[in-house]
Image (cartoon, rainbow, N blue to C red; front, side, top):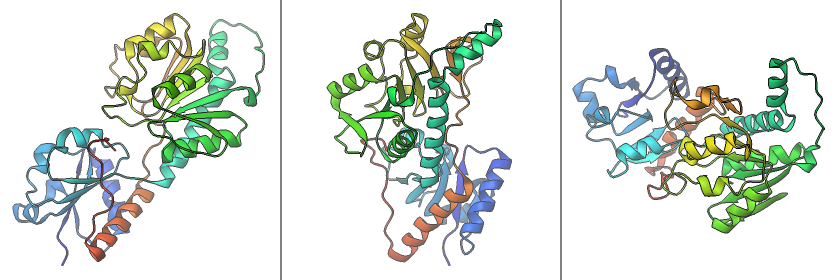
Length: 314
């Protein structure tokens, strides 16, 4: 009989129960138990765990744990806690997630493209003023990140008539998209983009990537969408750029601290739209099916799926 599988992470009880239902339905022949219900003998038997930003103290009570499958695409918190140990981490790569992210990027690109923030402000002052229309083909959207998410986003934006440019750490080729890489390439992309969308994970290389110097290289009046990680942008530098109208508007869905503190300047800034980390929520049904497939392959071959590169951070 297969050893028990532990489910542990930063869940509310209702969320944990929802995940349990989906995971058990996807793996009816496996014994999946929440960590809090494991007895000492079961804890010693656990070799595989399903995790969502787990508590290091709980992981420490699973002495024979070999690998863990994250339920989130972002794994920076897991790496920070366990990156130096022997635990092998598989992150969630869900095609459905890419579709959700593409949908969100299109929605908020259109929000900025059609000047919705300005019209909202005009409503507050009962101002009736039509702004000049700019065609999608005359807007350049710059993507920071051309992995699976960035590729899906680029294709969705291209299908809706926008010009698309993308930047990645290493050279990439993507049909219809002008691709840049390296420090010089990043400067070129920032200088030509009307809207910049951050899709990068949190790694040592991406922390503070959009600092004061790089924000100054943006096309005057450009807007910013950040759906990657909060650490991508230097907060004080962004607020300065917004206050000076160097940046027209910022749509922010990810932050260094979440929930965003009540006293944070973003909440009341007229040129900032705050979102509560909703751009691409993980879907339990599709995510559970992916975990089930990976575990079935492991049971058959003994090979752990591709794990997180601890140096790159993803």
